[in-house]
Length: 181
Image (cartoon, rainbow, N blue to C red; front, top):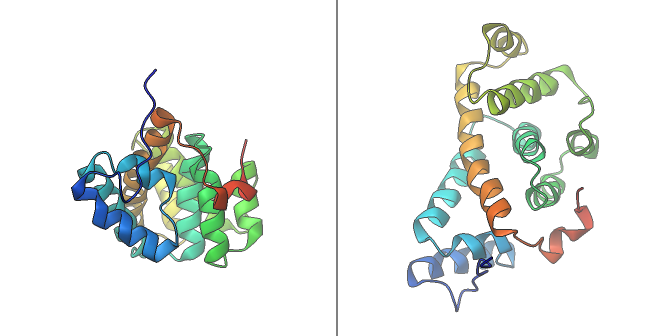
């Protein structure tokens, strides 16, 4: 088996260097995921753009966390669950939400539970969410925009979750306190 390279700013392909430098400046580190993605500058760029777009969606910090972690847990991504636990903490998301998502237990309110249920259905059924499930999602206060934004978040998470599975990306030291599974 050939191991994937975890690039640094210095070892990355030229087209990835600026993106890794930007991550280091913004986060104080180059996450291992970014180091792996740097091998394909276009994939790293797509991931960063999807992350930015999803972060700017209509979802608040709690809702972003619900979508991200629902997908991470369903995909069994042992890199992204700890990373997004740290991100949720930095966004001041109620730890009860994060713990419920990590442990696959009920969320503390019905609206977030509806978001979780719709996200899970979209993931598990490859977008074939039933009319009844959509109606329950809409009844909770969401609309068509949020359905599309779940798909946007899923697009981002497919890149990271699948990359981490293929590359066996090691968890960064900063995320190890939030290890999962």
